[in-house]
Length: 254
Image (cartoon, rainbow, N blue to C red; front, side):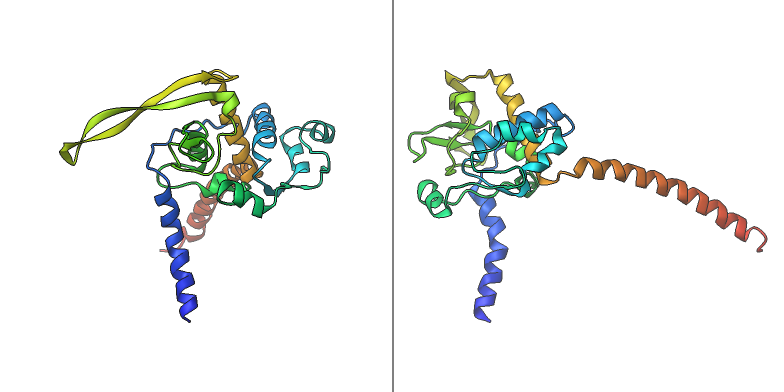
């Protein structure tokens, strides 16, 4: 019984501990490209080339990418590793033990990360979009990188060649709670070395990647939303018919 109580207490505290590990950095609103097949295809390419090396997406099969306009031939030629097949799940070859030794923790599966990261601060896509755009060089970290949204994160900046190397800038301002103290307020990033993409191109690519991860978390979401509109319209018409039938039924009752 004591063990059960400890387990319950741990499960209750875990969400709070996870939030405490991350900062209260304001989230940017992520552009929604989930209805743009070209953007989703670009996001899939970025995901396979940069994320799938360490993170799995074990709830999705490669063949499901047909839903975003890719043929089996295109999937085989551009998105599959040597030993993978179109019908396989999107998993990684790296052993969890090795991943924990290299990064300090096993990289999480990303199948539903776009939904799991939703909070009062913003949606899951908002979190991912801001997170992937706020890495900066930090030589004190084992990976050489840090992040404004998730301080001291174990993940390196896998997109650094596209974005380039940046350093954060801070302004010294008075502490609103104690004017005798000075705090450092984030004031933006300084580009140290350029990347292969401009800032706008990088933001667009990250938006495509996040949109793909949003689609991946629920591939049927756009169909669900379309059906939802028709269901509400049907219910609206049915309510009017029911109201008039009710009036007709009771019209002779006084």
